[in-house]
Image (cartoon, rainbow, N blue to C red; front, side, top):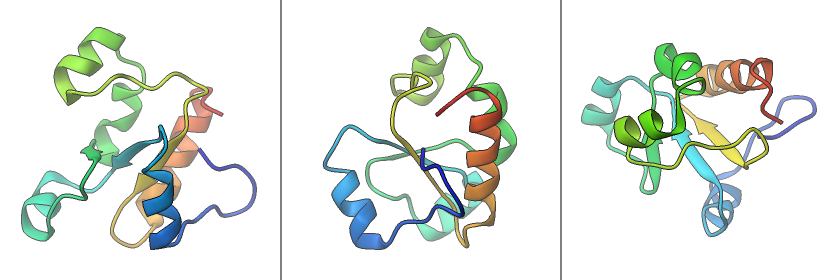
Length: 99
């Protein structure tokens, strides 16, 4: 997660980050993924499910999202369509102790 003011990434910064061990969570709704497409290498967890997902048992998270659950110190990037939901996702994650 980014810290500080209003974190944001350019397309190129995200592309570079995805070469590292960052977890990319797309918080758009499933219908948006179906309509506009999936971002390669991301997992979809709609914003309304995020708080519950980040509090799951790691085995349950892996089973549901087919991805290792991030630890509270793992690098995570949130994305959405315009940036509003990804900022909310960042706030939710930080309130749960993610750094």
